[in-house]
Amino acid sequence: MQSKIYVLDASAIIGGFYSKKTMNFTTAGVISEIRDLKSKIVLQSAIENGCITIKDPSPEGVKELETVLRKSGDILRLSDVDKNIVALAVTLKNEGFKPTLVTDDYSMQNVLKIIEMPYRSVLTKGIKEVIGWVKICKGCKREYPPEYQFDECEICGSRIIRKRVRKN
Ligand SMILES: [Zn+2]
Image (tube, rainbow, N blue to C red; front, side, top):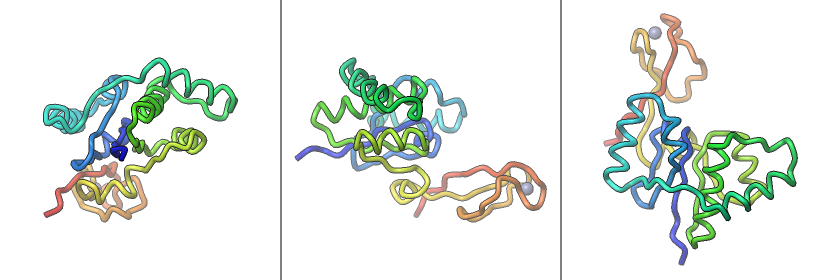
Protein backbone atom coordinates (compact mmCIF):
# COMPACT_ATOMS: atom_id res chain seq x y z
CA MET A 1 0.00 0.00 0.00
CA GLN A 2 1.20 3.50 -0.80
CA SER A 3 1.66 5.68 2.20
CA LYS A 4 -0.30 8.86 2.44
CA ILE A 5 1.66 12.07 2.89
CA TYR A 6 1.01 15.78 2.91
CA VAL A 7 2.79 18.42 0.86
CA LEU A 8 2.50 21.85 2.45
CA ASP A 9 2.56 25.22 0.77
CA ALA A 10 3.11 28.51 2.60
CA SER A 11 -0.60 28.96 3.39
CA ALA A 12 -0.61 25.54 5.06
CA ILE A 13 2.42 26.37 7.19
CA ILE A 14 1.14 29.80 8.14
CA GLY A 15 -2.18 28.13 8.94
CA GLY A 16 -0.38 25.79 11.31
CA PHE A 17 -1.31 22.70 9.34
CA TYR A 18 0.70 19.57 9.52
CA SER A 19 -0.35 16.03 10.18
CA LYS A 20 1.08 14.14 13.10
CA LYS A 21 -0.04 10.83 11.64
CA THR A 22 1.70 11.03 8.30
CA MET A 23 4.82 12.56 6.85
CA ASN A 24 4.69 16.19 5.74
CA PHE A 25 6.88 17.66 3.03
CA THR A 26 7.64 21.15 1.85
CA THR A 27 10.28 22.88 -0.28
CA ALA A 28 13.12 25.20 0.68
CA GLY A 29 11.37 27.87 -1.42
CA VAL A 30 8.25 27.68 0.73
CA ILE A 31 10.34 27.91 3.89
CA SER A 32 11.96 31.10 2.62
CA GLU A 33 8.49 32.61 2.08
CA ILE A 34 7.61 32.28 5.74
CA ARG A 35 8.21 35.64 7.31
CA ASP A 36 6.17 35.87 10.46
CA LEU A 37 7.94 34.87 13.60
CA LYS A 38 5.26 32.62 15.07
CA SER A 39 5.00 30.49 11.94
CA LYS A 40 8.80 30.31 11.81
CA ILE A 41 8.95 28.98 15.35
CA VAL A 42 6.23 26.39 14.74
CA LEU A 43 7.92 25.38 11.51
CA GLN A 44 11.34 25.11 13.09
CA SER A 45 10.14 22.80 15.82
CA ALA A 46 8.16 20.68 13.34
CA ILE A 47 11.33 20.27 11.29
CA GLU A 48 13.39 19.41 14.37
CA ASN A 49 10.79 16.86 15.49
CA GLY A 50 10.90 15.26 12.07
CA CYS A 51 7.26 16.15 11.38
CA ILE A 52 8.12 18.23 8.34
CA THR A 53 10.76 17.25 5.80
CA ILE A 54 12.27 19.73 3.36
CA LYS A 55 12.72 18.32 -0.10
CA ASP A 56 12.99 19.83 -3.54
CA PRO A 57 11.28 18.40 -6.62
CA SER A 58 13.20 16.21 -9.03
CA PRO A 59 14.00 17.69 -12.46
CA GLU A 60 11.62 15.07 -13.90
CA GLY A 61 8.81 16.24 -11.63
CA VAL A 62 9.38 19.84 -12.70
CA LYS A 63 9.44 18.88 -16.36
CA GLU A 64 6.28 16.82 -16.06
CA LEU A 65 4.41 19.72 -14.48
CA GLU A 66 5.72 22.26 -16.96
CA THR A 67 4.50 20.16 -19.85
CA VAL A 68 0.99 20.23 -18.40
CA LEU A 69 1.16 23.95 -17.68
CA ARG A 70 2.37 24.74 -21.19
CA LYS A 71 -0.52 22.83 -22.70
CA SER A 72 -3.00 24.67 -20.52
CA GLY A 73 -1.86 28.11 -21.63
CA ASP A 74 -2.05 31.32 -19.67
CA ILE A 75 -4.78 30.39 -17.26
CA LEU A 76 -2.54 28.35 -15.06
CA ARG A 77 0.20 30.75 -14.19
CA LEU A 78 1.99 29.91 -11.01
CA SER A 79 4.89 31.51 -9.21
CA ASP A 80 8.15 29.57 -9.18
CA VAL A 81 7.66 28.64 -5.54
CA ASP A 82 4.12 27.40 -6.25
CA LYS A 83 5.33 25.48 -9.29
CA ASN A 84 8.02 23.82 -7.22
CA ILE A 85 5.64 22.73 -4.50
CA VAL A 86 3.28 21.16 -7.05
CA ALA A 87 6.29 19.57 -8.76
CA LEU A 88 7.35 18.19 -5.38
CA ALA A 89 3.96 16.49 -5.05
CA VAL A 90 4.44 15.05 -8.56
CA THR A 91 7.94 13.90 -7.59
CA LEU A 92 6.73 12.18 -4.43
CA LYS A 93 3.90 10.50 -6.34
CA ASN A 94 6.46 9.18 -8.82
CA GLU A 95 8.46 7.88 -5.86
CA GLY A 96 5.47 5.80 -4.81
CA PHE A 97 3.87 8.00 -2.18
CA LYS A 98 0.24 9.11 -2.12
CA PRO A 99 0.54 12.88 -1.70
CA THR A 100 -2.19 15.35 -0.84
CA LEU A 101 -1.26 18.98 -1.36
CA VAL A 102 -2.40 21.35 1.36
CA THR A 103 -3.05 24.83 0.01
CA ASP A 104 -5.56 27.64 0.14
CA ASP A 105 -4.27 29.03 -3.15
CA TYR A 106 -6.99 28.94 -5.76
CA SER A 107 -4.80 28.90 -8.85
CA MET A 108 -2.73 26.11 -7.39
CA GLN A 109 -5.88 24.14 -6.66
CA ASN A 110 -6.90 24.57 -10.30
CA VAL A 111 -3.62 23.12 -11.47
CA LEU A 112 -3.98 20.23 -9.03
CA LYS A 113 -7.42 19.46 -10.43
CA ILE A 114 -5.97 19.26 -13.92
CA ILE A 115 -3.09 17.00 -12.98
CA GLU A 116 -5.48 14.97 -10.79
CA MET A 117 -3.46 15.48 -7.65
CA PRO A 118 -5.50 15.31 -4.44
CA TYR A 119 -5.55 18.50 -2.38
CA ARG A 120 -7.25 20.00 0.59
CA SER A 121 -7.48 23.52 1.86
CA VAL A 122 -6.03 24.62 5.15
CA LEU A 123 -9.03 26.34 6.61
CA THR A 124 -11.80 23.84 6.03
CA LYS A 125 -10.55 20.38 6.78
CA GLY A 126 -7.23 21.35 8.28
CA ILE A 127 -8.82 22.56 11.44
CA LYS A 128 -9.72 19.13 12.68
CA GLU A 129 -6.33 17.68 11.92
CA VAL A 130 -4.19 19.46 14.43
CA ILE A 131 -5.60 22.36 16.31
CA GLY A 132 -8.49 24.75 16.49
CA TRP A 133 -8.71 28.37 15.55
CA VAL A 134 -10.10 31.55 16.93
CA LYS A 135 -10.07 34.97 15.38
CA ILE A 136 -8.69 37.70 17.51
CA CYS A 137 -8.42 41.46 17.15
CA LYS A 138 -4.85 42.67 16.94
CA GLY A 139 -5.82 45.88 18.71
CA CYS A 140 -8.20 45.20 21.59
CA LYS A 141 -7.69 41.37 21.65
CA ARG A 142 -11.41 40.75 21.43
CA GLU A 143 -12.08 37.18 20.32
CA TYR A 144 -14.33 36.32 17.43
CA PRO A 145 -15.72 32.95 16.37
CA PRO A 146 -13.91 31.26 13.44
CA GLU A 147 -16.93 31.96 11.21
CA TYR A 148 -16.63 35.74 11.68
CA GLN A 149 -16.63 37.13 8.15
CA PHE A 150 -14.93 40.49 8.47
CA ASP A 151 -11.30 41.55 8.48
CA GLU A 152 -11.73 44.38 10.92
CA CYS A 153 -12.75 44.47 14.56
CA GLU A 154 -16.25 45.81 15.09
CA ILE A 155 -15.15 47.48 18.32
CA CYS A 156 -11.86 49.17 17.51
CA GLY A 157 -11.45 48.69 13.77
CA SER A 158 -8.07 46.94 14.02
CA ARG A 159 -7.16 43.97 11.87
CA ILE A 160 -8.46 40.59 12.89
CA ILE A 161 -5.99 37.76 12.78
CA ARG A 162 -6.43 34.03 13.11
CA LYS A 163 -4.88 32.40 16.12
CA ARG A 164 -4.24 28.79 16.78
CA VAL A 165 -5.62 27.25 19.92
CA ARG A 166 -4.86 23.77 21.10
CA LYS A 167 -7.81 21.54 21.56
CA ASN A 168 -7.91 19.72 24.91
ZN1 LIG B 1 -10.59 45.44 18.42
